[in-house]
Length: 376
Image 1 (cartoon, one colour):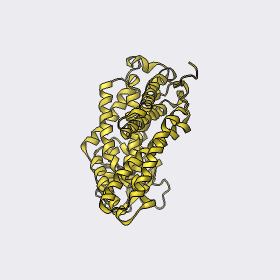
Image 2 (cartoon, rainbow, N blue to C red):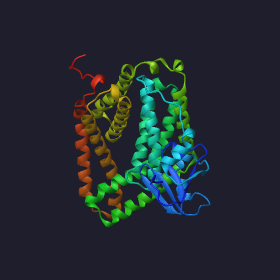
Image 3 (cartoon, rainbow, N blue to C red):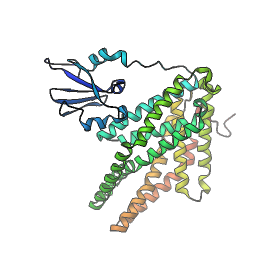
Image 4 (cartoon, rainbow, N blue to C red):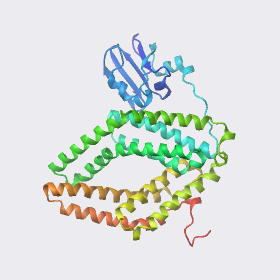
């Protein structure tokens, strides 16, 4: 609720017993028969009874409440600031180390992505633009950092299980994001039948997203990520793996280099790949892992970001073209008349694939990489 209050009416605030909402800078309350959920992205308001939190609002904050009951926690004339002043002693959290150790740097990134996952969940449930993409990216970033920096986090088997759960979540979200991208891509040649086609795909894909976010499996994943963060953050330092205790600048470049070498090997194999589309897709996945590894260790891993982005743009355009041709073939079979668009998309894919080796070699990966002939 807004901190500016007129009149003498009071707001009754609701939260979980452990104040999960307030801990994440969210407040939920009712005043004069109107409910308001204040979020970092703005308020959500609706009329309702004071007998209980409306199910619409309860569902919006599920990534934070984890299905804990929302109960009255305070009645105030003020807003968020006053609520924090009243309950602040109940939301204190143990300080997290912000040192230059390899684990310290990586865990800062992990915490950021866990928070981004919950924030994107709320945005998806609100129907915010690009929110499904944000949710997928947060999940991919966590997967990437767990895979690249397992030696500083520890627990290879456990982190692999987390990676599998995050991959499954991404798979449930993928059709909604792909449909969004492809529908926008189709607009230059859109016809009535293409809008009807993509509208149906979007309806089905969005229903799949809702089922995924309302599932018990997803709730388990969110809870497990919280537990993982606590365990890794509060583990005594002398119990950390040796690599975790060393300075990030001495450890992370070597681990990120292994990811860069994977990209390099996949790019080199493109020329002889029996299935080019699959091979380019594998390059794209490896390039994303590299990007996220570099992001997590950004302070000690200076790279040529514009060149890396240009390389990824080529990979993304190739993949979008491949997916577009799949949709076009369906439309061609149903209605005909899409030969020219199919040919144009095939030319786009060819251009992108041909440009990948040179685009890769243009990237300056700083301390990770020296191209052959450029020194040792």
